[in-house]
Image (cartoon, rainbow, N blue to C red; front, side, top):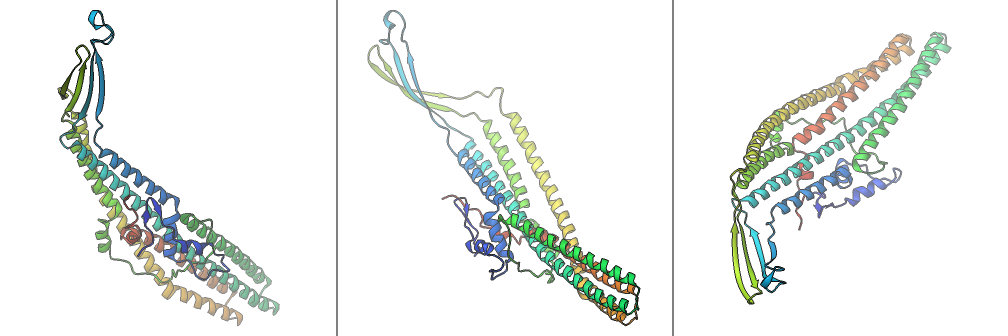
Length: 427
């Protein structure tokens, strides 16, 4: 059962996850998981809290549109302060009345229906935005893991540089290699140190991005993620089927329904509403009393709401066209993301299975051969740089894969369990 429900406009705070984030790294027992990150994002991200407030505002508007018009009370004094027998208030007539407009032709129900669709649109827009934040969280989480791998590669590059430095030093001291090779290997070692510092900064930046999404000052924990274990990609047919259930598609359908309800409302507004009144009249002249009743109906000779009806009819057509455009764009984006993800996965697997092992083997062979004088210094440098380039390309393939995976997860509805029960009605 998911821990994130909003009750009375507020999120239940996932205390365990928040407490875990506050533990210093030296005392942390468990690494931060992606689900824990989601929990904190849902409870503490300020934008998500603003979406709840917008939903509450839309509910308030729905309630307002469902209310009946207020009755009108009136009090009249006639035939006073005149001349002769009507001086003062002796001949005055006092009338106390109440009038009520009666809305007909379904005005109130149509008005409430428009507001209800508007409320659901706000809800779906909020869910779409929240799922987008979860996708960003997913991507940021993967970026930390990739940055950690990059730091490991940089540390290994520095160790390789130090090893090469010793090997070259031995050959130079033995007069088996010119001194310029010692200088070149010093340059490679310095470049490795720079790469390590850059990798450390990239990791720190990646953690800052995730911390901002989670609404916390910083992340002192390691994360629990294995980016080298690439998950399977769902079929495009499955994604295309799931597109119909995305919040964006639902919101587009609601837009059509809302505009159709607005058209019905404008049509009902063209029907005049009668106003009924009752009252009692006091005659001071003879201390008599009488009741009165009235009814009034506007005459729609000129304004029959024809302009608003035409505008609402055009809005329906516009919403239908926008819905078609959205579906085409969603399909286009889905296939582009799916293809990019599939290509990146195949590329990353090729690096894992073939290219990276071959590059490592080539460097080992070059180091061994150079130490025995079988390979030149240029061969050694070329093997080393090839490995570093291959590692960088592999990490880039992982980055592309997980960036697109976060979007595919959103289009496939993988974030729906986190948002399905996010909004609740007021009690």
